[in-house]
Amino acid sequence: MTATTIQPALVQQPRSAQLWLLLGRYGALMMLAALVLVMSALKPDTFATGNNVVNILNQSALSAVIAMGLTFTLVTGEFDLSIGNTASLAGVVACTVIVRHDLSIPVAILSGILVGILIGLLNGFVVTVLGVNALVATLGVGTLAVGVNYAIAGGTPVSLSDPDGFLEISLGRFLGIPYPVYIMAGLALLAWVVLNRTVLGRSMQAAGGNATAAELSGIRVDRVRVVGFVICGALAGLTGVLLATRTGSAAVSAGDTYLLAAFAAAFFGSAVLRDGQFHIIGTVIGVITVAVGFNAIALLGMETYWQYFFQGLVLIIGVGVGTVARRRAAK
Image (cartoon, one colour):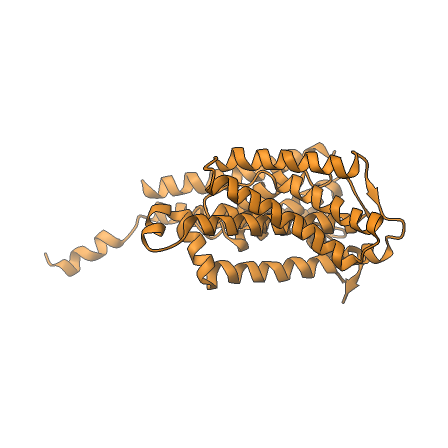
């Protein structure tokens, strides 16, 4: 028997293994497709409409922005539990800059983003220089952000007296599509390019995959991780500002709920197209899946608490199916 006759037998996988691999890679997409098909059949006049599609994308925009920032940190192998607190503080700072100091809207937006950058730098310093575990470090820094938030706002919402220009950022439309959808799409494209087409992005993926091997290849792993925290903080700050532009005011806990949403989307997205790897396209798909589920719950007249059940199930099913599929395929 020759090597040429043995080769196919070694390479060819059983059909069951191929099916499990397909399920692990496309199972999350199948879940989204099934959800869309079922709702289109149940509510064709309300769900399967152009206006509702735009509404779902608009509802996804803020969650996508903060989740994309979190993805950069996850890619480097770290976590950031301060993003919700960062978003809350950034919104309060942006509104305070306008209300108390009468500065322009662009300055207010930049102030909110700068808050996120500073918190990202602090997270990176505590993790890389002090050597504190990322979960503990970002939880502590997030708690500090809460204290600063209360010191600035005193626990009460900061509202703009003339919010029209501020509200236009979220309520304005171009070609019938709200501005936040364009912001989400633009940032998604930019984030994808950074992670997949730049030296920085490849260094981040190398650091997250094998930090020791990355260091031996000349990558400054700690520096790369700090950059990941900074990008995460900046996008969390932007999310807080955009959240404030929806109501013309900012509350001290307005962005806290985005923490769970961002992690659910990122981990669900890690089961999309790739085998447990965090990536921008997967994160955006994860955000949209959650938004479609929330939209379906609202259209079906279900109670709000079902949204939390759905969000938890998305995280468990999305990650669980991928993990089980990879194990079965390996067997």
